[in-house]
View 1 (spheres, one colour):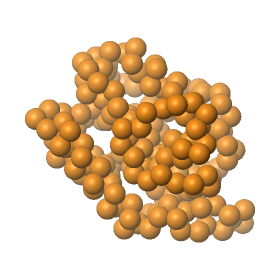
View 2 (cartoon, helix red, strand yellow; view 1 turned 90 degrees about the vertical axis):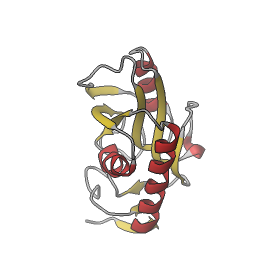
View 3 (tube, helix red, strand yellow; view 1 turned 180 degrees about the vertical axis):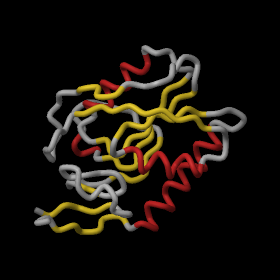
View 4 (cartoon, one colour; view 1 turned 45 degrees about the horizontal axis):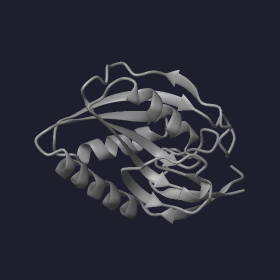
Amino acid sequence: MSEKIRVMLSESEVDKRIHEIGQQISRDYAGGQVHLVCVLKGGAFFMCELAKRITIPVSLDFMSVSSYGGATASSGIVRIVKDLDESLDGKEVIVVEDIVDSGRTLNYLLTLLKERKPASLKLCTLLDKPDRRVVDVLVDYTGFQIPDEFVVGYGLDYDQKYRNLPYIGVVEL
């Protein structure tokens, strides 16, 4: 592997923040339950860890939406690769994403999911790159705001590599 990876956020920093987000969601939905919708593939690591830290009942579903291919920048073309298995009708839904940068993909996805009549629809992301925002997207739960660098680890990849890193790292080509 010719890329060098520099640690941006350590495993312990990521773990601590996910625990805090899980506590906040548990408080916000106390007495109820939430339906987490994972945006694959990158969101899977984050959603699994987040779900373990939510203390109210949780159900899960998965959706695959692509706008990157093998590139390091979003193409702007959104394609649904795998749709949800369950209805969202009347559910308290939280979309769980690994990273929000341009906002194009999430804007498209949230618009699509609102049409499916959930009781509520919120967005939770591990990483947010507000400097890259092209389309405004309201992020309800944010792990970390990060600068405009290409990051990997904890589910995020570079051409399908480095997802399994237990920390967030910066790819230095």
